[in-house]
Length: 342
Image (cartoon, rainbow, N blue to C red):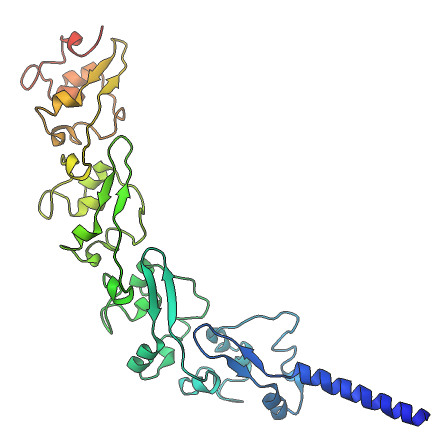
């Protein structure tokens, strides 16, 4: 009876061990968003290495610190790449052997882009173009497996899609927006301007005459409102002033305020002085002069950013540019009451 109980005990231990081994040595699936899972077979590898688990655990894989590895890391000897070097087993770097682990057809990859619709990358199209050369992209440089999302400006410098889409092997990412962003219709952009009416930039109007690449990304980043630029900077060729320059390509930003700021009516400007307040009337002056006569040759567009003394004005600065001893208007010298409420 005692022997029988002992035999049952031994059998139970063996069965438990076998059960543990079965649980621990089942196939492992590594899932991918854009491809069929890769299946690692414990049975195959245990048979190959005579059930010696220690060849991999915990020398290559630490079960207490599980992590994922990219193909680029495997090619440097990490994970599967510790054995799959082409010596002990087929190499993870050999393009002809990709399908030995990655079975089935890779799927399309959709990227959601705020404000520009979804972009779909077709593996089928690119595999057909490259003749099945997966490593054209998956080479540790173009696609590494851990790269962050990149901007269009970064692509234009050769990152990710821009490594091939540079106008040489295939169409460039610069300005060919609708080739990838299907149904893209850029919206109008409204710029609020303190002290002036809002400016609306119409993509519809400008794309009738220009291509996306004329502005993006040489002049503007693709994201909306990348930074504010003053009118003085535009006059020097920045932002809108790249094309709206001296009338060669389009009307100049100098003095054509109402063309972009519809309904704009500049207010009076008050100057507080020890000789009494002085009021500059835009209404009165715009009956005789254009905005460009003063802005920005004489005054910046922002009020109270330039101070000038009466002596400076007598020498032709500020108001003295026109109020110049009666040549263009009454002189600033001696007619104080005309401007100052004394």
